[in-house]
Length: 412
Image 1 (cartoon, one colour):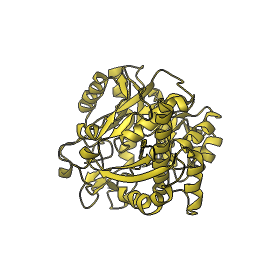
Image 2 (cartoon, rainbow, N blue to C red; image 1 turned 180 degrees about the vertical axis):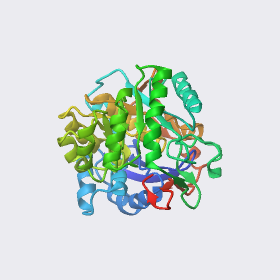
Image 3 (cartoon, rainbow, N blue to C red; image 1 turned 90 degrees about the vertical axis):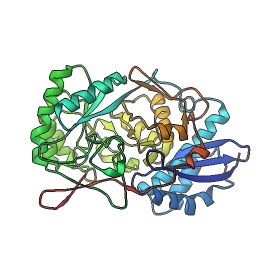
């Protein structure tokens, strides 16, 4: 079954998405997510100019061979652009194969290992009352596990805090729903790590006092701490029994996590900016993390991320796949199918897409009592409404960046 057509479709309903649509000579279609937040057009170029010409006429069923061909024949390997492009091809081919087999994709990956996927949402607030309202709102939406992000006294605008007014370009969209701001230049935010380290433990104390000990709570440090600062935070949060502390220090230096591990028993999650199993090799082997945070979309697709998670399983490390709104419904569906099938599933990040996005991507997944399920339609269970997608052309958008009080650029 040969690939006859390959289309790269860019649409911007609630934010920018890049989708690869493959069509076989028999008319079977498959979708893959190639979205790279703030750098979408780099992947579009990689796909259209370098990958699509190589796909026409290839055997659609040979998924592993195609993956190895695209990875090894480029010579310049790895990196987010390359791996997002390969991921889109990989997921689209799995979508095709499952449709031809007449079964949901998770069945081809080994069948269901669970009845549903525990998911967490993002509660946030500039103040404690605002945060508490956000937690209750998420509970009303069915979330049983909730990420906690708050404002820090003295800082005007920081990562992960919902805001309708901070940036005019966002036109009323919640900031934590889509941090990539539409506009010609990225927005500048401010940061002070010492203030943050003093404030965050008091927030979790208040949340535990208000909502009790049972609810799984998560927190994202977003790469902003040095190793010793991350160790200090992990230790100070131990009384509040976090499900995990995410991205506590920049992930480029895996050895830094040894120091964090020496000082805290707070579980660690990392990897949303990782792209290959080689990024994880040391930290999995040395058991420096507890959860793998990579997205199918940015880690070479289902074929490669499954290899990462199979490796992690040997060390009792679980999945915590990246699932914000810059992962399209196609990428989210791929994560759900993979999560259903693996044994070492941990939790799935789940942020709801907007109404416009849901009109472009027709989905079959279910959300019930804090659990996701990809549905039982053949393939991924997602179809792209091309006409609807055409109503929303690409708009330039960038993620923000941080500066310290003295003007130094800092990790966002």
